[in-house]
Image 1 (tube, rainbow, N blue to C red):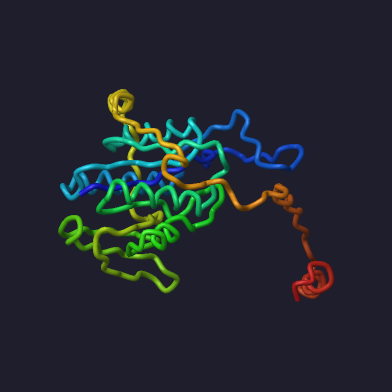
Image 2 (cartoon, one colour):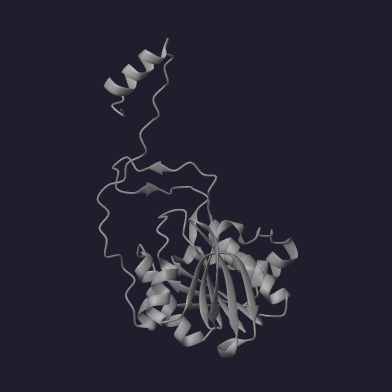
Length: 253
């Protein structure tokens, strides 16, 4: 079974985000970029399925600038077989990414598509659901456990989902789409020999025009503001003073 894994290039989660002086966007000058943490979990799950003999080929996909090939090479070093890069310098929103992935699903005919449930830059949690709607495939979102039985079109997928009330177990027919939650697995680190081997693995570059789609954002970014600085706390002498401040100053009572 072939697995398609979506990965995204984002600001490293350890980096403190800065806003440009004109408030037009986030300042990415000399900022370390990395694979989205939820996408790392998606790649790890695909590799584990391959190690169990369930999966025969892993194909990571990204939509973004040329520099995003670095994240594809990381996925190849972790155990993927070949990669596909939909290259564009446009600011890609969830729907644009879902359209590109839908075209690749049509071309590649994977038995399973795995995505991170959300990206840590936009935090939208939309692409997996939009992809399911565009392709008409069943979806299991927020997965904390994935069990595959059978193969391809006649296989079954049992997904344990993290929901507000606890855990929900659903069964899907393959092919299907899964979005990963934090507790699905713990991603491994790429070994140096695998990083070197990844440089020779196939990486196919496509454009949105070749896929017959448009990925340009339909949303206009007006302004970006940093979060307000936290105010210092104060000590109060009594419960009555506390209630007075909550009522008259904080106005939360």
